[in-house]
Image 1 (tube, rainbow, N blue to C red):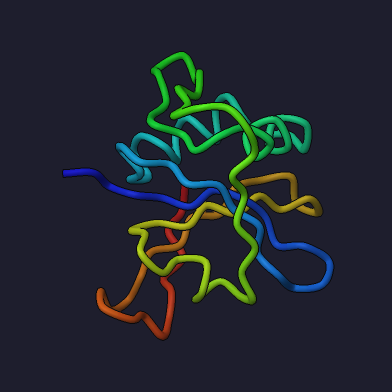
Image 2 (cartoon, rainbow, N blue to C red; image 1 turned 60 degrees about the vertical axis):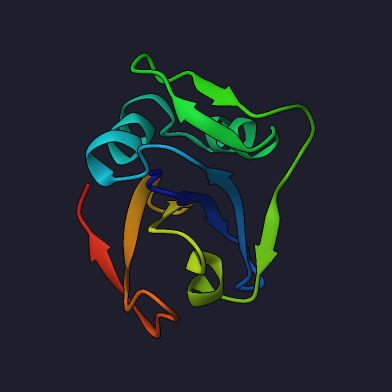
Length: 116
């Protein structure tokens, strides 16, 4: 079974732009990989300009499902985490990743922030 994650950023208009990551979405893997290998604006843009992410290798390489951009734009963070276990958002201001987990599995109404 996969631990699904959405990876992206909050746009200036408040909308959340993400890409899907299928396997190992928990903070001890994807969170660690994002923090160690993808902690810059350029790294974020490279990740979200590609296809869905199958998994991350331990060297930080994103293994993709295919070609082409597959970003999704949602109205807010609650929308963005629907169907996923974790949401990772890059802060352009703070230059860091923040991880959020769902509170409530069917339709979450709140998110918990998890320190990376």
